[in-house]
Length: 318
Image 1: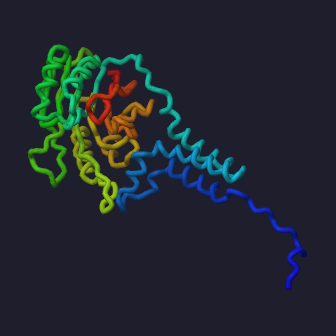
Image 2 (image 1 turned 180 degrees about the horizontal axis):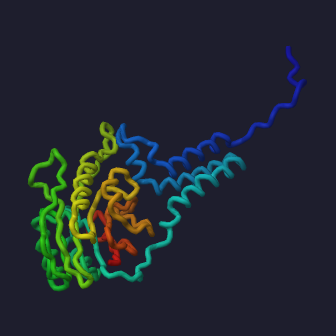
Image 3 (image 1 turned 120 degrees about the horizontal axis):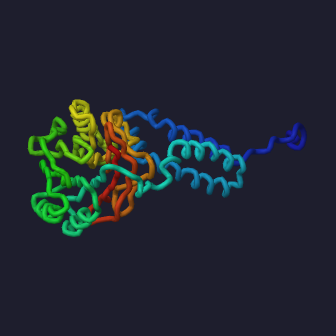
């Protein structure tokens, strides 16, 4: 029988090396989410949609490291924490609501199942925006918003279920065809209009891209949304006016590669997270104010209405 007490002393087992090894992929995916392909269930877009929440892995891993009493695992968390700060640290400070801007705009998906359109209409009317863009306007709800906004925003343009109300004259209103190929002609969720502001003409687009469904058989079902984003991006690219403001529920975040046709042509403020959906516990900013040849200086959410989205307010420097 071998003598187990003889020979070289056993090497001490390092605690937490498995936990420490998890820190590397967490940091890598936070920094380079594009490495996850969209070929299977659009997993890349799913990751990018909720990417800021990757930071929650740090306290979870820290708690496990403390349970294991592993200094190695605890120290390894410096890497994902540093990467998260580098990627999202600029969004932590809240938006400066007092920042100067030439134009104040409000974007809100009012929700077709909203039980309180009257209250929602009063809330957006009182917000003090120069331009108010609304989506999911049903035939029954539209008169409610027209009445509430009429005095402060006498100019309006409505196409299908999207509309724009303005303090300033609006001309050249027309629909923008952003329909996916499998959608019929009665689906109208895009409009383009020229706003004649005191600082010159601005092309204003209002859009509501298709919703996304997460199903076991399809994964992150963003195909129709992506197709619609491509059509909207092409419309913006062909816009004759230099200055463009896009207001809309894009059903995607700025980090989601599915919105590349828009984010490659337009800019948006990155200060503050501004999560706008779902209103009960916001997890992602899918409502946006984006511009070309203009600067969005600040964007922030307003208190909840009867919708499942929060209103998004922004100031734009023309």
